Structures are given as structure tokens and as C-alpha cells.
Image (cartoon, rainbow, N blue to C red; front, side, top):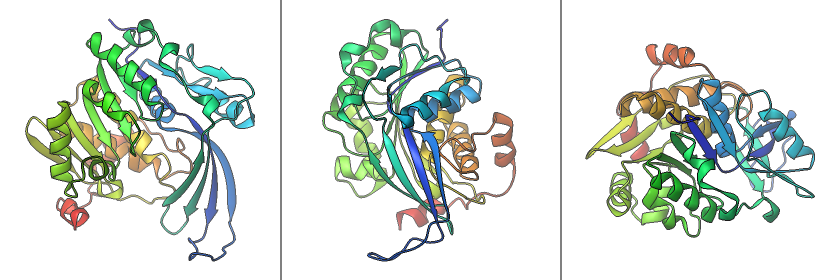
Length: 314
């Protein structure tokens, strides 16, 4: 039996959220109503989600030693996540993001920065750091690092999930060792040149052979190709305060679903529900819910209509 259910290798960030009554026109001005600092980051937030759902979780990443780094480090204390191989970088600022949140809709616009001193190299990994888990979750930023992590996982028969939102140089070295590819809505078209998401996911799966090729669609839900069939799961209608971190929590919930052995339809629906619930609170990790809370939302009728994907494609 593996020591950990899931190990995550990738980004963390410390966010400054700026709440605005509405997004101004280009060149315009608008007063902001609040400024809030909170921890986030793709893989770190997904691992916090996994831990809160009860998985035995380990996080591997680099954290700076400035005030934002201390905020991130402190946020991971007491979560139950194993942090033995988190790298604390001296004289290095932590990854930072300034996030404008339109209070009319909860939609966010992100401006981010990550210093080169946070970069992790493949030499900082060992087989034992990955082989101790039943599932590996990665992002795409330090491409050579996550490519090595995925290769180690593949050698040991460990399933790999990946969260990728944009094109990274060398990412083609990661994809052959991925089992569950879950991208942003923009990635499949940018990577393949196919505007139709169905054709783009088909091409990705055919080229790299992953078990599941999927994409998140924001409020429209999620779409996945597996076993020769497309699975579409519509989003949930909730009172949205902040969409920051919704994708990260979706990925954490999907990792949980894989570990627990859910089928794909249940995995997508559960992950959509967890992401929607997180949007009802402020911050990337502000509304991470329980399995029971997600299933309560799933049981209610507050779903988008089943043809919502057709509306998304149009």
C-alpha cells in the first residue's frame, strides 16, 4: 500500500485580491472596495483540497522567504499535508498574483509574477519522492521537473493527472506519461490548432495516448473523452463571489475521485460541484467543501441545462 494517496508537484502562489464594483473600460478608473491577501497556486491548492477531503497528501514545490512566502508556508501548516520536500528558497520572493474581482459576477482577472529563483530542477526529485504515492498530480510550469516526475510515476505504474492552462515549452515531453489530461478551455485549441474542442481533445488523445483527455469550461462545466466516448457534465448555478481557484479545486476533487474509484461521469459532476462551492467564498481556497456538501449540491436541481455545451460551442 502506498504511503500517500496523492503527491502534487508544482506551483503555489500568494494572491492579493482586489475587489472592484465593476471592471472599467480600457483607460478608465474605478475605486476598489477591498484588498485581501490569501494563499493559492494550482497544485498547492489542489493538494489542500485533497487533504480536506481526507486523502493522505504530499506536496512538492518551492516557496520564497519573503512575507508572501511566509503566508504560503503558514497556510500549509496544520492541513495534514506532508511538506518534507518543499524547498524554501532564501532571498527569493514567492510567486505572487494580483487578482481583480468583478463584484457583479465574481469573475477574476489575474496578473502574476514568478521569479526564476523558484524554479525547481529534475535533480531535486528522487524516485522515492514520487513512488510513495498512488497518484501524481502536476502542472506545466517547471516543465523539465514535472516531465521527470511523470516519468518516475510511469515507471512505477502510478497514475498521473495534469492541470495545464497554457502552452509551455517542452510540454510535449510531459504528455506521453499522463493518464488524465485536464486542461483549461483555451489549451486544446492553442496546442492542436483545432477550434472545435471535440476534435482538439480527440487529436490530443490520439497523439499521446492518455486514458482521458478533458477540459474545464468555467461556468459551463467540463468535457472529457474516454473509452471512445465524450462525457459532458454541466456546471452548477450558485451565488458566485469569486471564481479564483475554481479550476484548482476542480483538479483536487478530480484527484480525490480517481483515488476513490468514481466513474468518469461521477468524477466530473463531483469536481464541478466542489469548484462551484468554492466560488461562493473569497479566495482560491476559501470555500473548499466536504464530500457531503458537494453531494448535497449534486442532489439539488440547480444545474445548468444539459445542452449548455452547445451554447458554449456557439
